[in-house]
Image (cartoon, rainbow, N blue to C red; front, side, top):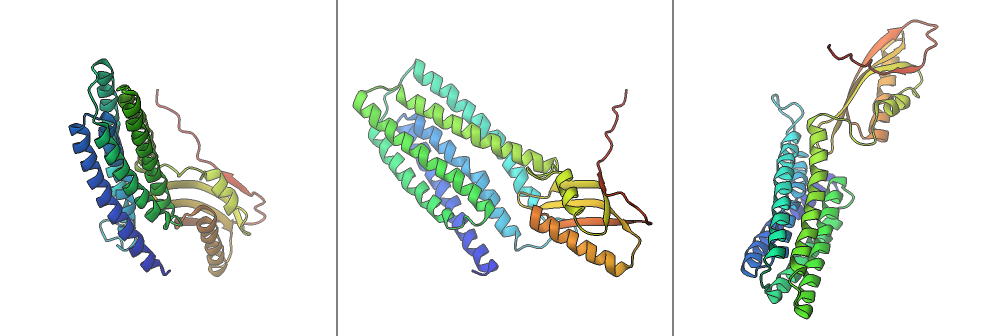
Length: 304
C-alpha cells in the first residue's frame, strides 16, 4: 500500500478508536455509578488512559502530512508529548482516587447490580476487542503497535469485570468488586507511569532507549576516512523522531570526497539507529593522523 494511503487508513482506524473509547468510558461511568460497581467505574478511567496513546498516534499520523513552518522548524511533535505528560499525571491521581474508594467499599460494602455490571463488561470487551483487531492490522507501524498492546490490556481487564460479576452472582461476596477495582487501578498506574517516563524523557531531550553516543560513534568510525567523532548530541524530537549533531574529524581532502563520507554517515545513522535528522560538522586534520577514536564530552565540575 502506498505511504499516503496507509497513513489515511491508519488515521481512520485511530479516529474510530478514539470515538469508541470515549463513548465506552462514558457508558461505563454511568452504568458503574447506577449499578454501584466500582470495578466498572475504575475500568472507565482505565479506558480513558488509552486516550493519550491514541491521541499521540492520531497527532503523529496527522503531522506526517504537515510540513514544518518558519516558526516551528521541527514541526509540532512536542504538542502531543506535552498532552501525554499532563494526562499521565491526571490518570495517576485518578488511580489513587479509585484505591481510596475501594478501601471505603471494603469498610462499607454496597450491593452491586451484577447483571448490569456483566452486560456492560461484555459490551466493553466487544468494543475493545474490535479496536484491538483494527489496530492489529496496522502493527507494522511502531507507534500503532504500542497502542495495540495498550488496548489489548483493556480487553483483558474487561474479562476481569465479567469474571468478577459472575463470582459475585454465585457467591454473593461483595468484596470481589473493590478487588477488581484495585487491579484496574494498578493497570492505570502502570500505563500512566510508562507514558510519564517516556514523555518526560522526550521533553528533557534525552536520547531514546537503546541509543548511546558510544554506539553511534563506533558505527560512524567504521566509515573509511573518519578519524575522530566528538561533541555528539542525540535527542528525541517527538515520539518517533530522533535528531543528532556532532563533529567529525577527517583527513584534509577535496570537498567531493568529504561529501561521499557525509552520505555514508547519514545512511548508517538512518539505517542502524533510525536517526533521520542529522547535523554533522567536519573538521580536518593533516597526516599522519593515526588516531581513530570517539571523544566523549568532559564531565562538568559542580560549582562550590
